[in-house]
Length: 565
Image (cartoon, rainbow, N blue to C red; front, side):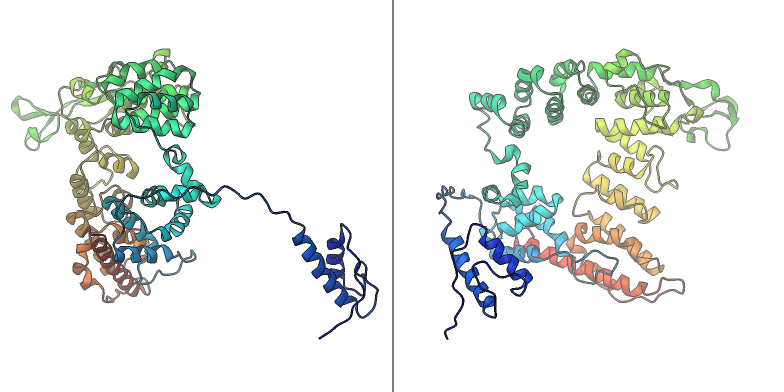
């Protein structure tokens, strides 16, 4: 088919803009450049646009060919079993639904299973199929909590891809040294050269790797440039000494107490106080002992109603009289002298805190816990914690002991401050908050930690147990798993508001031992709802237990596919 149009002149430099303007306004209002007005103007506009498009494309000069990227590095790890590879593809294909207050349904949440799958795959030392790496990096980009495990599993090829795609540059930042290979740690010349010439991230990675292998060599390397480092860099480098901290680090840390940076001084003091035999710990013990003592004057004889030996710290007197427990008296420091500041005591109290109590807490926190048995009459930690404290100082004193027990990793003091998990007062004799209790539990072994939390749940239910469950090893030990399931069952039978237990139910899906699935089958039926139950609570509970059982069986299948059943 032939169509005629007005002749088209060669467009000028701004021809394309003129054509676009004519198309937007219409040829009735704006005649295209080089075209006569009339009924053929629209066709002429299209012809001119086609010609100009070819002109614009043909006028581009080809760019110089870029240098081809190097081939991706080999991953020497064994390949995933086929079933596990298919499972990984399913987990990566799942996307979380829109947030809202709706019910989750009975289907497992695959996005929450991906971290567990990665943990098992990393423990088994598998390499990912190359075709899933883009999806794995996309998943890690959206979830910072997933990045360490995802990048470990992705291996060296993930860093190769990250250099080619700006969306994945986070992998270079997250990798030690930005993905740069560290020299052999026994090659002193290469180590020294990287330490002196490397980027900050590379130097941090080098110091951390060397510290985990040879702590003294890492400390000596840091000492060679300590005086020329920036304050913020000194702080980061000093923090790397936490791993492998020992008495040999004391001279270097004592030197850091005179640093120009307050944050560096505070970190050095904290590390020294974690060494009970250090000179700083001894100085802090002297200061703390001057603030705490037994006050026998506050004790008065009383007639015992039972056996005198049942009163902690008490003594039986002739004639059946019993001396009441001794009382701890506190006299907080009246000033923060330069010596205290040099040893890491922060002079200025936060808003709402008294200066004397602020100074006192720091002294007690930094003093070796062995100080108190000697100072308080040879008593054990449990006996010391049971003593009354005069003048309202108990909360401050016990909170400082909690921080000291966590810093010094002292299990005996942690047990004393936690108290019996079934005690009527859920906070225990010394812990002042759920956060403090969780930190104290972290100093205990996994089995003891699980046993204590199981006893706490049996006595107090699940309303305050969420934070405590978070510090327990996964999968939960059998006594802890039974305690959680029993408490959920009790809440269901009582007609409790079911949505308030969704957080614990989510933890159970991720942390309960998959072998517990068979024991939960009896909880899948919709229970009879008590008169005072929330409407629809029975159906929600049945749905939640169905999701729990399905998730546990899926976790068992995942472990079997990875050869870790």
